[in-house]
Image (cartoon, rainbow over all chains, first blue to last red; front, side):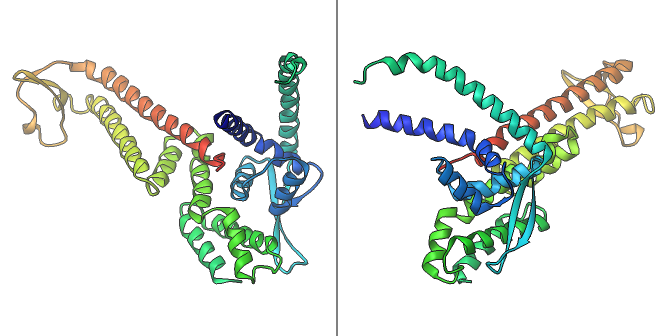
Length: 121
Length: 196
């Protein structure tokens, strides 16, 4: 039983990390955010529990790919914050990812439909 | 600002050395800002800072996520052997595996270069370049010394050393380049997406 639960958890971890890029880009859809806001958005809007240390290097890569750009903004908190915005290419990329995700989810759902009719054991 | 935060950022700065200095400064400032925002006291309370740093993971792990991923950025978009070699060189400064991979890359390029030189040198000094049979063994001799140092024996290739040298040099360079690109590709993805 423990093994089966472990296996599900491992699978979930793989699934989440595959989706992290999509989730981060999606969190920026409605406007600019800084790193911690992105983390909070992911934690509130989804149950994607993201280790904090993975988000910043990933943002740095998304920037290198040209999908986001960043600017330093002096904040009321008394120190500057680095805000990220989607670029035009980033928006196109995100739309592509989101279409591909929807297609994938639909086809997998179809495949899984018979399982939901099974009585729970 | 607590000492533990400064120590953490200092260690991070050291481990990010392979990246351009401006980028390192920006990463360090971004993480300083992150820790300040994540602790209600604005990073003046030791306990809060320790908790925030704990959530970020060790400086070593964080730096390796940045460095290994960005190492081959150039190499991924470019087919130039120089860009590839530069990425491999930076990898070599980071790990033993990288060091040996870089040596392998250099050795491969040196071997292919010597094939090319042999082929291109033949029209200039035909008597000093060739494949000589010395006794029972085959010996590829590249002559850059005096004509007197040419080995005594039967020369096997003659004019054919030009096409054969070019072909062997090209294949060797292609093979080296492909193996290096494969290394770059297989290294790139996993560390970034490693989730504890």
